Image (cartoon, rainbow, N blue to C red; front, side):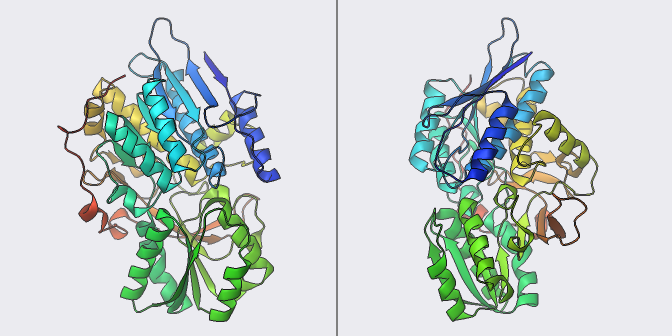
Length: 440
């Protein structure tokens, strides 16, 4: 039997987000309110006499990435539910504890410390904001606790900020730039403006775009830095009108990209330049009108890929979470699910929750395209701990098969063709000897 309770932090976000959070809470079976970062969600399976295996879910429930945080959390919990229905792992029921990391690095650190020292979490899973992911990973490495960074994608996460205990499951800004920039130069032109969220992911993603652009004969006319949580883009869009670039490459995420897209359409600027969004997360465009999903963008997964197992995966999502505001799963949910499932498989194969044994199972792990629901096989790079996987380039689908079919997949790139060549040079994983042994 599985028992669930759910609570999520109240905030002053949009009505759309409130509907999403309410639907998520209903889907998880709870009805309480959320108060602050320490409110948490638990889901576990009862098993007489067995000590629960505690997994700490470090996902945002408020702040810029609340919507994506909610979806990656659902993905992790569906994987946990599937294992619990089969008896858990190593004969132990799995208990998931969620605490809101608030899209804030300082809160991420406090959450990680609390889960490790007070909740006996065996593993930590979840992150969208790369600053938050880095903060959590420093705490995790200090204790030796394995941390799965499910959705933050700054190249630094598998580069200079890599750790022996951290595994990065999303494509990064360099992977997406490799998949999108060259093609965009050919079709859009060589004079570009970079529109960049002013924090680590934005900086490093735009840096990767700039490198590829200039290597292929393009030119950055100007880079405009946008503070996080910007809702009024009028000054930046006025500047774009003056600069008249052939293309605008954005590294803008979460609620910021929603606001940007709406204001670009209001001014008609989506018709005056080509727009390239390095990576487009599903929760950030779901529900927007067709005009607002302009330009081309990268992603790691789409719910209508014509591949074995995809329809069944979508059906499992809809059965597990009926009535969700987001009716079909996207890339963020997919990453959360796949990372959690693979971790639990590795624990089962290792026959122990000891971190060093499980790390050895994860390093270099190969995953078939069929198992991953993607076009090409994936693997975890043992030198950087990043999951190398299929990268897709997409645009808005103007001939949808159904209302939710809003992406048109334009290309799919093999991992070898979109490799981040800088990360292995910058990543210096701690030795096994210097990594504390950790087991719960």
